[in-house]
Length: 217
Image: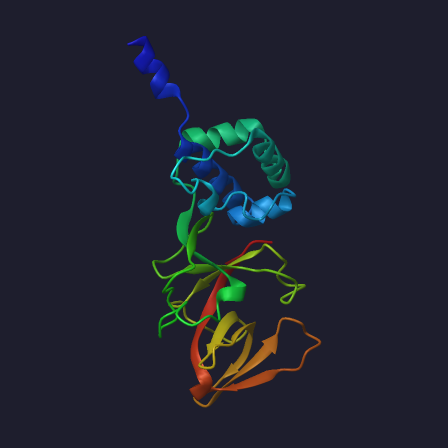
């Protein structure tokens, strides 16, 4: 009985990694975004790093956990609570790097996630069943969105003038902008960099457009 009780109190591989995922979500980051903010290799907390090539479980180091806690502004006590509470803080949604959003097969004709390259991230916000997340890389969308930020995108949400949107053209280009005007013939888009001129995209060239519902800042 004593041995059984001790076994039940042992931490599991999934508990530790799930707690790291929720720690990242509390900071409004993906696991790779948290790793970068902590000064670690961006892939340190990726799912592909949690199991070795021969199938053995790989545990995060105490040093990487300590750096992650410091980067997220959290304490060890908070991390213990995340382990004990289990999943349930937020909702898991599909996640893709923004640089891959224009790749063929990443989305279906309706703008829903499709194909390979997607992972998951738990975000502290409500999300419908079709919502997905894109992780920003580099400074191309600055100053509005920074490297490592995550934007939550809903293909099913109604879109109004003034909303920030993700637009994908039939040629495969993916643009983030503010919708200025929408007609049956065209979209007028204002780039996030206000110094850039407005852009008009012919409606027949648009594969899909979806509203940005939330962003980590």
